[in-house]
Structure formats: structure tokens, C-alpha cells
Amino acid sequence: MPDEPAAIVVLVSGSGTNLQALIEACRDPAYGARVVAVGADRDGIEALARAERAGIPTFVLKVADFGTREEWDAAMAGAVAAWDPDLIVSAGFMKLAGPTFLALYGGKYVNSHPALLPAFPGMHGAEDALSYGVKITGATLFVVDPGVDTGPIIAQTAVPVEDYDTVETLHERIKVAERTMLVETLGRMAREGFTVEGRRVRYGR
Image (cartoon, rainbow, N blue to C red; front, top):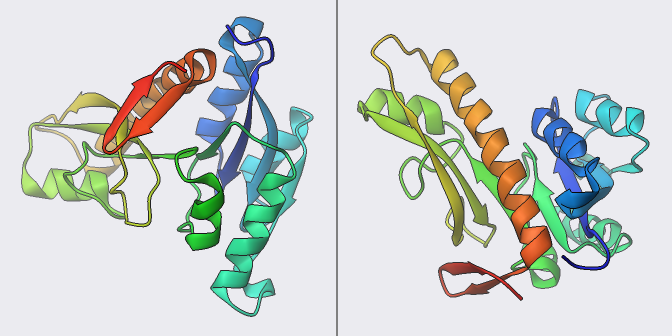
């Protein structure tokens, strides 16, 4: 166990159910991590309210408030840097990281996706898996790189596709499995450390 819990900044765009699961996990000192700040690309969302109820500082940077997407990306990188995080977690954050952000946080920025990558990347993982007719899908936690859902895979969890499934029922089961995977994996990353070598992510310092 490290002497100090790992500092995590969480980026959000919506309701914040993954954030809430992480906040609750961090209440246990043995978990090895703490959420030091929550950032968003829009205000008035439940995820920010969850952070505020938990006493966690928040910040909001809207793309529309900047002249270019690159300026917004640099501002987001600077806002995150103020908290000196060990890990940055995209928890439903609906904006792609740009070159400035990745130059600063490459290898420390992680995201989850509702499919077993590299299958079904993009915005509609559960819908695409159901349409294709696979019998097993799931969720993937990965290190963010410049591509769309293409970074090195940290962890995956499988979810069976049932005959009765709709996009909504399947996505809901994936989200439940995703939250468990996210919390368990981030805790291990915080406690044990990790390294990224090519497409391999290994635990340990």
C-alpha cells in the first residue's frame, strides 16, 4: 500500500452513476484512492451535484466558451493539472481528449466502454452488439489514446446477451457490470501502481 491514497480526477458529462460508485468505494481507507476533483464540460448535471454533496471540488469548462477546440483542450489539461492527479477517469465524459491533454496525461487517463473492445467501438456499443447478434458482450476499461476506443486494454468484464434483450435492458446490465469492474480495477491500480508497455497494461510499480 502506498503511504498516501492515489489522487483521482473524474471527468463527467451526465448523471454520474460511475462517479457515485467510485465516491462510495473511496470512503474505505483500504481502497487506496480518493477523488480530489470532478470536472465537466457542462453545468447543471447530476454528476456535479453528486460531487458537491460529497464535498468534492468541481470545475466546468464548456467548449463553446473557447475560440477553438484546441484552446478548450489546453484549458481542461490545465484545470486537471491543478490537482496533480495520479489518475484521470472519464466517467461518461462525452468529449475526446486532444493532443495537449494526452501529452500531459498519456498513460494516466482511463475510460470505460460498454462493449468488449476492439469489437463495437464508438457511441453505440450495446446497440451495435445487439444488432450484430453476439451472444456475449460486456464492458472494457482502457487507457485513452488519440483514437476512438483504441487504447491499451486494462480490464474487461463479460455480460451475456439474452434472447429477450432490448438495447435498454442490455445496456443497463452492462452498466452494472461496468461499475463493478471500474471500482475494482481502479482500486487495484491505485494500490499496486501500473505500467503501460505498448498494448500491455501491467500492475505493479
